[in-house]
Image (cartoon, rainbow, N blue to C red; front, side, top):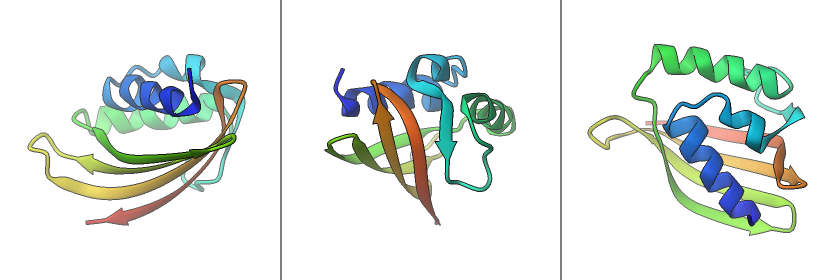
Length: 111
């Protein structure tokens, strides 16, 4: 898989299908998180979003654009409600190692 394909599959399985265990396939165990609201490592990511999905069972992200260069992928996306209305815009940046997410930065813009 290309890095963009890894990101697309991860977003679908983890964020949109809410399959927390998908992180084991796509995220390195020592994943570095630069969002202060989520802890370090793959297990912290899984815990944070398991809680998020319980609190927001309709949580869904629509990828609008991806840009890939070397080991980096930037993703522009929208968090949308069940009617497709934008709740928030997000820019995620990932560094991948050996086909897995190794590091993450993000910027959120509430609507």
